[in-house]
Image (tube, rainbow, N blue to C red):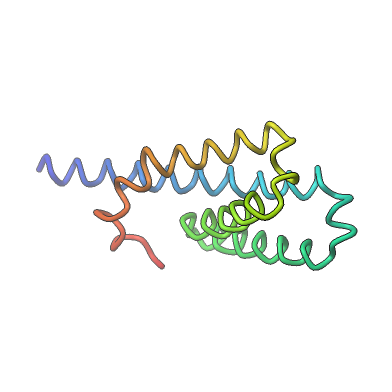
Length: 122
């Protein structure tokens, strides 16, 4: 019985972490688009790419798949941070949000994912 309770608690914690990470990463991507509006106006291909990731995230969230919602935005944000750090590094709130998502991954998602991944839809 304890194992069942422990598993449910861990699964709930993992679900909550995915939901929080998805909310943070999605709002961070939206904020990045807003604070770098001038850059994205001059780089429509990059704006389109960001919008594809954002739409993928929003669609996944609407379907209740917060893991994929987070993955969509986080993938784009990490790529952008590597390729164009000037779009995020000068904005403290964006850097802090990315750090929060990374902390959720390290402290909750990564340790629990392998054990509970079969109970999440792909």
